[in-house]
Amino acid sequence: MTSVIFPNRVLPYFLLAPQIAITLVFFFWPASQAIWQSAFREDAFGLRSTFVGLGNFRTVFRDPSYINSIEVTVVFSVATTLASMVAGLLLATMADRVIKGRGLYRTLLIWPYAVAAAIAGMLWLFLFNPSIGSFAYFLRSAGIDWNPLLNGTHAMILVVAAAAWKQISYNFLFFVAGLQAIPRSLIEAAAMDGANAWRRFRSIIFPLLAPTTFFLLVINTVYAFFDTFGIIHATTGGGPVKATETLVYKVYNDGFVNLQLGISSAQSVILMVLVIGLTAIQFRSIERRVHYA
Image 1 (cartoon, rainbow, N blue to C red):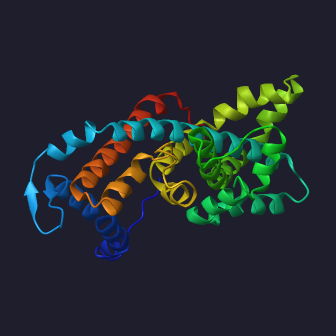
Image 2 (cartoon, helix red, strand yellow):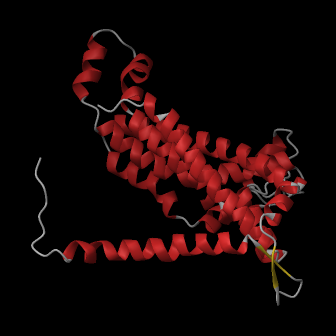
Image 3 (cartoon, one colour):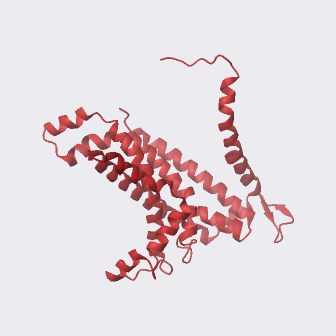
């Protein structure tokens, strides 16, 4: 194994400085501000702050709407992660078999990832709009009274579909890279031994994709917790009746709409600890079952 030697000892620090600066400015500084503000409560006019210690956290956990946001977040995160990963793996497997026009198919499937979250939300909102949406029209034709503006279950299906659709391209890209790294000799040997396509996928392809699957599981979980705010804000606004109000959207509602900065900061701290803990659990429990080739 070769090691990299820099002629100038100061050069490595200059190379690391931009990333360290970005991390400090956009992560550690906001996180420290949230922790500090979570211990204070401001008056109605925002002119005076009172130290309350853990009072904001006690208020948060006693709030029934916050417990509802936890339940909504669990359902939304699990559904979005499973839908986007299964669809990405299916498309990657199908595209890996295509010989003619493979590059075109992959380029078209990657495009949705470049769409902004708010644009993706508005796109799906128009498609499923109960008055003018084309998908809503077909659902009504099938006898389904589709209305995500009034039905909480329909609204959850809408935001899950929009969030999963946007993330499919990311999963597809990594699954394709993982499939290309699998030696073709293993698959050809299994085919010569009489294993059908499903047996080859279950016994050879999917186990060798375990590192990629584990990585995407962590990334998709974090995505569902944090990066779906724009989709929910553009489609349902957390409604109807808080049916799609996730934890990150409740932080926004309490902080920027209701101007309860202490309560909102406490919720952001809880959310940060929750995601860090969930990621650690995934690394400890799932990574043990991951076999790296």
